[in-house]
Every structure is written in C-alpha cells, then in structure tokens.
Amino acid sequence: MDKKVIYGATSTLIVMLAVIALVVVNLIIGQFGIKSDMTADRKFSISKETKQIINDLNEDFTIYALFPTGSENDDGYRRIMEIIDQYAVNSSRIDVAYKDITLYPAFIYECTGENIDISPGSVIVKGNGSYKIITPFDMVTQQINMALMAYENATLEIEPKITNSIESLLQNRIFNIYGITGHGEPELDENFISYLGFKSYNYQPLNLFESNIPNDCDALIITTPARDYSPDERDKLTNYLGNEGNALVIAGGDAPFDSYANFNSVINAYGVSIEYMRILEGNTSSMYSGEPSKILPGKAADHEITQSINDKKINILTSLPQNIKILDEKKASLTIEKLLETSPRSFGKKGSASVNKEEGDENGPFIVAAAVTDLFWVSDIGYMTRLVVCSSSALLNKDDNDIVYNGNFEFIVSSLDWVTSRGDTSTYIEPKDLTGTLTMTLTGAQQRNIKVVTIGVIPGIILLAGFVVWIRRKNR
Image (tube, rainbow, N blue to C red; front, side):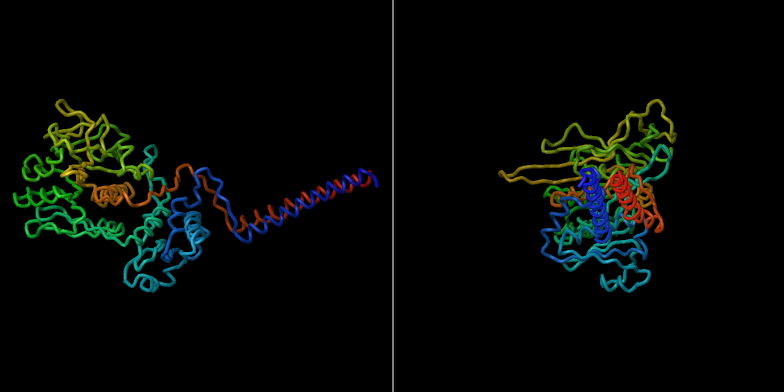
C-alpha cells in the first residue's frame, strides 16, 4: 500500500479520535457539571480553612438557601449558589436545600420553630440544635467610589458568614453584653441589637444605680451619657475592669466630657481621655459627600480588629467625633494602639461653629478609636483587661451604618470579638474580592447556542476538515 495513503489514513484517524474524545469530554462535563476554578485567587471556590472545618464535623448541618425560583439564571445568585453547593460536595455532614419562601411561607416556622420575619434571599445555617440567619445584607459588602460618589460591590461574604456560623453553632456559646443606662444614654437601635444576636452576643441594658455588674458579663458597652456617673457607679465600673473586665466605650457627639469627673476617672485609669473638641475633616477624600463632619478615618493596617475590615474593603463613618488623647502619665502595664485616625488635614475646634479652618484650631491627625490592653501580673499569674474606646457616638446610628453598608456595625462587633478574646478562637476566612470583576450575562438561548457551537459545530468542522484532507491525499 502507498505510504502516502497509510500516512493520510493514520492522520485522519488521529484527528477523528481527537474530535471524538473532545466531544465525549464536553458531554461528560456538561452532564455532570464538572468545573474548575482557574482564577488566581480562587474566587469561585471555598478556602482550605473552610474545607478543614467541614471535613472535621461530627454534627450534621443543613444550609437552607431561601432563594426565589429561577435564581440560577441570575448572575449574583448563581455565584452565591456555586459557593454554597461546595459545602455539600466537600462534606458528607452538610446538606444544602433551596426553598422559595414566597411559595412556601410556612417553611420558616418549620425550620426555626419561631414566627420570625426573614427576607427572601437569606440563608439559614441549622445544626447542633440551633440556627443562624444570614441576610442578603450580610452577603456582600460595598465600598464608596469617591470618584463617582456611588457604591460598588467590594467583597462577597457568603463563605465567611456560613463557615463562622457553623463554628458558632458548634461552640454553642452565647456572650453576654451589658449596656450601661441611667444617665440619659441613647437607646441602642433594634437593628444593631439584632445584629449582635446574629453574632451570638446577648445584649441586656444595665442600670448601675439599681444593680451590680452580673458575674456572667463578658463585656460592657458604655455609650455617651447625658450626665456624669455617681461615685458608687464609678466604683462599680472600676472594680469590674480591675478584675479582668472588658468594655467597649462609644462616646462622643456634643457631650462635655471635660466636666464628667467620675466618667473620666474610669477612662483615664487606662491611659486615655476623650477631649471635648469638634473635629472636622479638611481632606475631601476622607469625608463623606463633601461634609467635613462626616469623616471616613484611616484604619490601622495590622491590628486584629481592623484586619477583617481592611480585607473586606469597607469604610467606617465617624460623624462628629471628638479627640482621644493618650495621657503622658499612665500605668506601665498599658498598651495603647491606634485603630482609627483622621487625616493630617483635619482640624479641631473648641467653641467656634464654623466648618472652615481658623486661627487657633488644632491640627490633625486625631485618634478617634483606640485599643487598650492592661496586662498585669500577681504572683507570676497574668491578668488582662481590654478596652476599645471610640469617640463618635454615631457609630451606633443606623443611618450612618447604612451609608457605609454595615461597616460601622462590623467594626463594633470586631471590637467586641477582640475585647472578649473571642476572635482568638474563630477562624478567619478571607472574603472574595469583587472589585474589578467582569461578568457577562447570557440569556438561555445564548447559552444553548454556545453549547451547540462548542460541542457540535466546532468538532464537526474539524472532522469535516480531516475528511477532506484524507480524500485529497487518497486521490493523489
């Protein structure tokens, strides 16, 4: 037989086998949904930390995604679903179920045993006799594009929220937080209290005039008082903090702290004071919507509290903050770290109502949040007290929190995690970066056309080309 014919036949056979293999592989991939995440930062995969946690589970969990029917055709939902589905793929202890609560409204009570209002698009993580709710608001963080003065998606939070919910349910530990009342303090917003509950913090108000600080108190929240503490209340706080107590202080606004002798003595014992001053921002990139009193402070790069905030690329808004001053004379056992700071172009006023910088104004930057650690030793045994002091009471304001898309509440909870040492035992899961992500939306018909072209047309053309080559070589 002619060598050319043999060569041509062999080449054609190889091409045909390659085409058949390509068709078979495409059909298998399409049939079984086989996918590979080729992105450098694994945007579409769960992390190795999550895989380790769910592979070690000894309890059964179910993730209920309360998504509307047809959500798989929406880019945003589909990306979240891809992450959720990997929990069941990577652990035999986890089931995933999709429920449309607009079609089955009774499911909420069946799942939780409670008549609670849960918005469509939420996720319920259930296991170990309890559950956690992740709202659509919790799944994506946004940041302000200062050039466009508009919000843009920053990070996808669904994996950190689900994994940390599983960890929290496994620990089955509720942290008790008491908020000091009785001095004209503003009531905490219900949305904030609900957010604390989601994070496994049980909040209760506490009037020090009527009660002592309970033994089960993991931390105190001290907000802006309209009048000073009594000597008895001061002593209760001093004794609590001196015995490894912890506190988050969020006090600012127009309160005249210079005249609060008893309040100051509690704070001053930990090396800081809140200086009565109206701070305004002079750097337009560090203020919100051109308002000098609405400051977007710089965040510490390497502190445990601000690490997750930085990674999520979200802002914190401090409206009408006052200056936190680090005292020259303080205990040697204290470590004080800056958390939030205004820009060098900010300035502080005392008495003037002007928003412009004037002669006599103090120059920035100013500290508006600080972390304090008091580590002391008694008979070779170490004891520790932790405080976070913030000088903007508006951190607790829902409207301000909404402006930075939950950034303020995230910062507060991160501060509570630190003062209670809870952050030392939880796993940090890096959120997925959404900035610069390009997406393409395809209709169902377009998706079918692409499949026809890639599975049928292209292989057919290659096959036809091989056949033509074979015929031409055979006739030579």
